[in-house]
Amino acid sequence: MADQAPQSYANHTRIIPLYHFGCAGILALNLIWRIYLLYGALSVGHGRGDTGMNFLLALALLLIWFYARIQPLTAQDRVIRLEETLRMERLLPPAFKARIGEFTPAQLISLRFAGDAELPELAAKVLDGKINDRKAIKQMIKNWRPDNLRV
Image 1 (cartoon, helix red, strand yellow):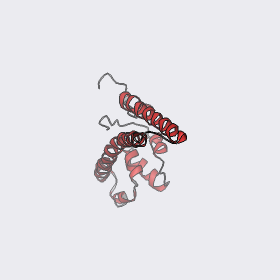
Image 2 (cartoon, helix red, strand yellow):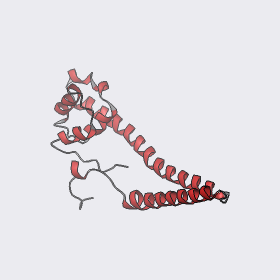
Image 3 (cartoon, helix red, strand yellow):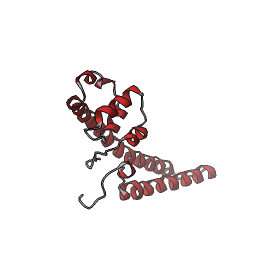
Image 4 (cartoon, one colour):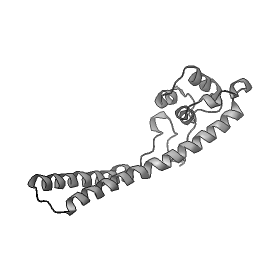
């Protein structure tokens, strides 16, 4: 990871080309092809019996691909919420610690990129301003704290 550019808002997303484009593309094309075959079989009125099953299988494969990505991200978000709650308990002023429970998951997940020095001020701005948009919160961060262990 030493040869990578420092993480910032502009480059913090993680794309795995073979997964996001290769696998997803193949599965999407397969589904489109199966829809085409199903449509052809239904329009003629005497399609083969396996055409509908092939369509359902193609749909199921695409759903498996989708959930194989979403479920680990959900687990990661739970861990991030815990980590950020513990970090805030350590870094926020005593009077503000009582408000930690007011943060939404989206706010906590976005604030993870804020450096320790700017977290107390930024956390107050986010809560007091009721800023819930992940993108807006991330763009407010001045000193980016990288998260290189993303799923």
